[in-house]
Image 1 (spheres, rainbow, N blue to C red):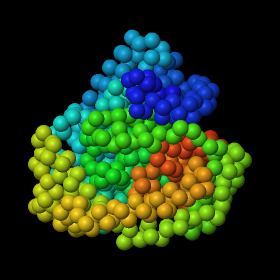
Image 2: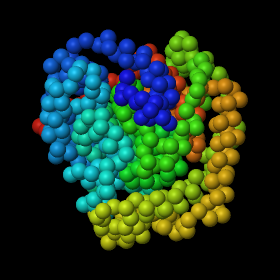
Image 3: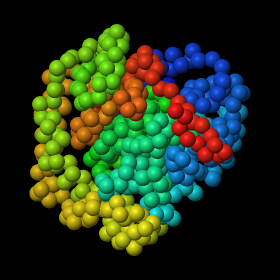
Image 4: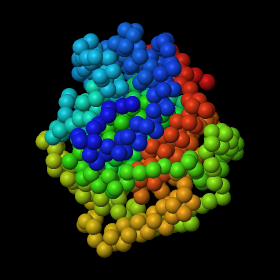
Amino acid sequence: MGTKYSPRSFPVFSSLFLILLATTSSITQAIKAVHGFSSIEEATVHDIQLAFKQNQLTSRKLVEFYLKQISRLNPVLKGVLEVNPDALYQADKADHERKLKAPGSLSPLHGIPILLKDNIATKDKLNTTAGSYALLGSVVPRDAGVVTKLRKAGAIILGKATLSEWCHFRTFESPNGWSARGGQGKSPYTMGDPCGSSSGPAISVAANMAAVSLGTETDASILCPSSYNLVVGIKPTVGLTSRAGVIPVSPRQDSVGPICRTVADAVYVLDAIVGIDHYDNATIEISRHIPKESRDSEGSLLQFWDDTIAAQTVEQHLKTLRKQGTILVDNLEIANIDEIYSPTSGEGTVLATEFKISINAYLDELVTSPVRSLADLIDFNKKNSKLEKLEYGQDQFVKAEATNGIGNAEKAALANLAELTREGFVELMTKNKLDAIVTPGVSVSTILAIGGFPGVIVPAGYDSKGKPFGLCFGGLKGSEPKLIEIAYGFEQATKIRKPPKFIFKGSIASLQS
């Protein structure tokens, strides 16, 4: 499935793609059993492509549906920041291409509308601002690497999704899902905290305002919103997908990945965006982590949960995994878990320095911009304190601006993080010969973040307060094929995801109790 690349044209990733495509072949076969097309709501990529093939749907009608959903729901949910004024043009172009191309010759994402988190650059009529007015009107030099691949696959750029402003790195005091430009995002299930920072992509696909979406993660920013909004998120191994043209926090931890309603849809998106980008050296270096073989499905359960109902739900899910043949190894723990989550681990120290270096480089490369440095951003917020709600503060910006590059303290922090990773998660996985760890919620996010490891989260149920949560599968670098296989099996066996229900008073939507 997905866009296939020959070994000659894609040498570094060919073996990974073969593994990924082979692993997900069961997905393709399973979803081919779906016949007919009844509703765009909750439709999968495969459903939509089948409807295209049977002349039951066009890309124009699909885009019009999502635009209508956005106009009805977004005033309340605030998951979408901007709609692409060229979306319908791109839809018409896709419909025309479909008539000319041979059946089966187009990418699975051809003609599919996708929303992008507003830190992913597009060289078009859309802004790329990280949710801040400081970058409104700035001009990027080129599409982000992942956007180039999406366009090549024929995807329709529907618009930009909201986010926690500056990926929640201006300050930790602002609410999840808030940005000056986008306002306060809300989970369509609780009308409350959507988590972040990729809040808009998760809100939007959960509420059927887009078919699929793309988010970014530094630490929990894909996994957490996916968990809170009952959708699937894949946080890839750092470097598996290009970060070029993405407003950064940390090149060491940043990753770009899909947020979708199903594992299969997330794989279609991941398949389209994986690969070498010469603007991001990490995409070349990651080749050393491509897995050459895979063991039987073996996982360790790490419990980070104190909610009784959620714990009971997780226990039922573990029984399901065991019935599928997954070997679960109980009573294992990461020996240095407390140190990893300690404020003295060094993660915060390094992130502040990395942010200043990387954001200055990003701003300097812009063709046109009212700000050119982190210092300029801090000054802009001071001068526009009401517009940017400076009452939330900008302490993380100020902390980062005070740094002076990678010095002795930062080198010591980096060495400590590497040691914590090596003696903690890596030792647990290798010593016990595990394919994955399984955790309810996203408490494992920092472990995955500091090591650049992948994670896949799938809807798992609701806690005692009725808030959705997911089950997260994490693994070593390059273990996406096995994680996807396990996550897909779990998803198909449980079928937890249900769309949120709304009631309308005039044109205003609210949650249906």
